[in-house]
Length: 134
Length: 134
DNA sequence: GAATATAGGACTGGTAGGGTCGGATATTAT
DNA sequence: ATAATATCCGACCCTACCAGTCCTATATTC
Ligand code: SF4
Ligand code: SF4
Image 1 (cartoon, rainbow over the protein chains, first blue to last red):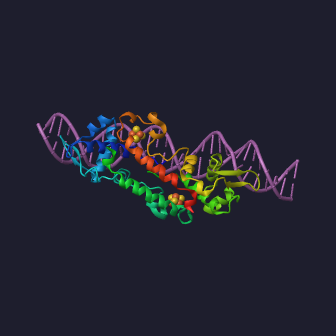
Image 2 (image 1 turned 60 degrees about the horizontal axis):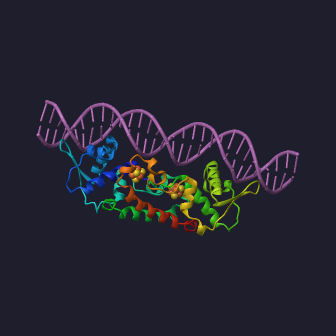
Image 3 (image 1 turned 30 degrees about the vertical axis):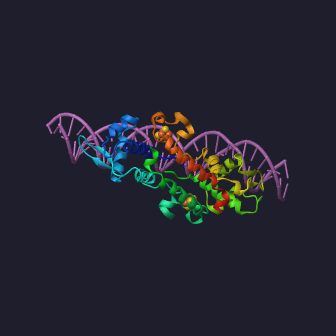
């Protein structure tokens, strides 16, 4: 269906929220979940992934939370997707998994033409940053 | 995940096949299924949808089959997707289903920004025709 | 050491996508 | 006529994936 996953949407909402506050400001998951009515446990996982991916910095313990680790203008949406969904936004699975991913690989006539589409997509998601969704 | 559905891929493969033959040439589903090793029953459904959508013309009975109903250069990929998947390639479900589609609708902060992305996507899929995948 | 935050594994439930089956209808050839 | 071959179309299964939940461990502050 070509839709962004909910996780990515929640992640973007959270990142946008942080990007609007003065840089260095600490935000907790609970705070975000309350503000936007997002499922707390799920959002927590997303934030953890973003932390592992180096997009946000985590601070444990009381008075802990997350801060942005990159400037919003440097933070590409493509990266956020790759971190949260464990894969780049691909138009066909064979691009990620190779010949093993699809039994049609060798006599597929649309694989190469779709490459053009893919490249255009890459540009689209790479040029869009968190700064732009403010 | 942002991937094209298998149905759409099969449809595009079929359409490409037809587009390469002299116009008016009749092609059967069985022929296509054999040539590209596609699941016959599934492909049949896809062809039926394309017929209902006016992309191909169907001829019943012995010596029947399908012919292209439009010039390949006029046949936009966006249309093929909409016909086969019953929806345009949308980046967020609220764009198709409106406020009812997502409980976050009214306090979602990324809906409007994603609109920009959506418009760019539309252009991408609208400008690509079946002619281009030959 | 109580309170509160992240970290992370395990699990559940719903749904949509890919694929299959069976039968109806239309057309042609013998 | 009747057999053969094609589209048509509804119903069904099945599996993978996604959103969401629960529970416990660990780190930090006060
Ligand atoms: S090989 Fe062809 S059908 Fe298979 S995933 Fe790639 S593009 Fe799609
Ligand atoms: S989260 Fe926002 S953008 Fe995504 S579907 Fe809901 S309202 Fe639309």
